[in-house]
Length: 191
Ligand code: ZN
Image (cartoon, rainbow, N blue to C red; front, side, top):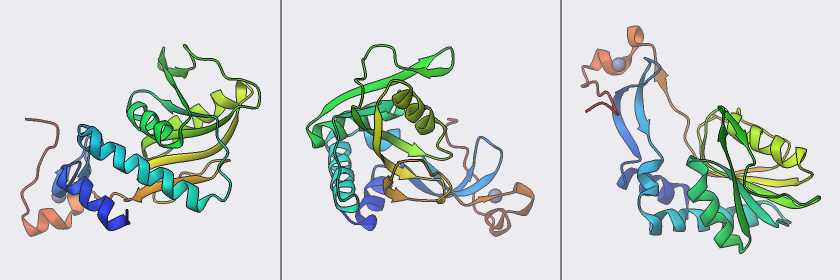
């Protein structure tokens, strides 16, 4: 899948909306992105994850991996499909007292991991997952994400492969070109 094809899938499933939006931060933007809306179609989500795995295999010469790990909730369906495409085990970390923890699974010493996530903006959850793998004696071989929103700012100690890179363009409401053009402002999430 090319970037354009992937972009189109996000648009068609309305995970990616173009227009004039007020974000939760109060800033205005020309785009609104909600990854869950693409994941409501398992067949499409599966195709995206297969494309991500293909991209990882072609960008990283040697991808030796025993297990895929993902942070709950957003990463779970991605991790599951990425693990299926790689033919390996899948586990997840989950929030407890607002901190990600490995609660249900064991990590073996030297076990090699791909970390999977749906969207990365600053990369905090991915970094937390990396720390958990390493604290438990595992090795992070690579990180695979569907959508990189960090504008290249998220970087980790292991190679990062993203299927799509879309950096949000945000405006101060006092200085928003879309407001000046009179484009109708939408409050996503509120009905
Ligand atoms: Zn505006």
